[in-house]
Length: 444
Ligand code: MEV
Image (cartoon, rainbow, N blue to C red; front, side, top):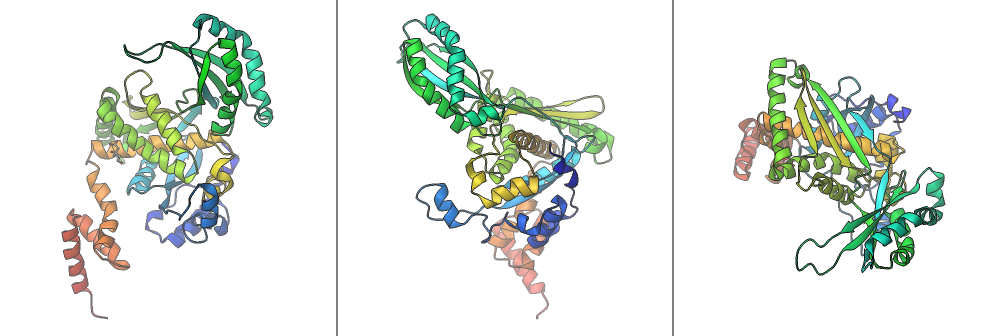
């Protein structure tokens, strides 16, 4: 990770209690950049994106849609502190990450590992007269095919990336009545360096397709990137001593650790639970990816297909008890980029990446994304294995309920506290409590 991080502290006590204006000041101080730089997180009109820029980004633009941008605190990854921008509509995600991150700060914090950024482009070949001969022909032509692919992207090659290998796969019909015979799928494996990779890969496979058709004697149909980026993986690992997990009480910590291990094993065995377990992981990953302008649908597709890679959908993470600690590990594909795309145009994304996170490479971004996933998972499992999530969740949701009941200004926090202390959050209770607050208010 870049040495820039050594200046950052991700611990900002009471951050959640500050006004948004003070929070921005504290954020700029903590990451060591100007208030104007972090101000871009909000954009000039408070939504991070002007209509003019939006109109150039997609088609048929009629407006800009706002979502809250929060900042997760307390994260320490590979010895470096990170304040993480998160865009999400669900209450408790940013709070959950910030809370979970406190438990994972021991030693270097979360430790991460990545593979090379290898993405796969697929070429589907049908009606191949002799599959074995076609495979041999592709193998013999591989150096020439790679060279041809690399001629298309000299900048990528100069940066140390480019097409690296070619693999062939034979796909047989799955069932009787399948309309097609055996088909060949060619995988072009490309090191995409700091790009997400879709453009580079799609250009290459489209260009190589006619040669592949000639070499195999078959007919090419699809030529497109695969989102199952199982050669571009990131792993995040965390260790929490029982004493830390139990907030100073090791016996309680051990009990919570047992609960988390039991929750993990259920998700490993049962797809019904794994779907929710993984959703909790993706709460952290996606909120971070949206804030940093990434194609989060691509990462979602990669994560869930990777979770089913052995033919059975399972948990992406695993938590286990060791002698005196709980250890967790999460591995998932991470197709993210720090060049091109929204990064060129979106001022809030630029502020998030360059001013707040200070990351330059896709590798750094992927380590932070996976760490957000592991931390979010821990926060959810710790709550689920103890008091359940509803108390904390509804407590955080209480401000929404208060505003919907008609509370304004300072009334919102008072009413939210009132509802949280009663443990009731329905509209009727909110309206009654608001009346009580107003009646108790001394006349001005
Ligand atoms: C809610 O958005 C996410 C959780 O359901 C995740 C989980 O159950 O692990 C709390």
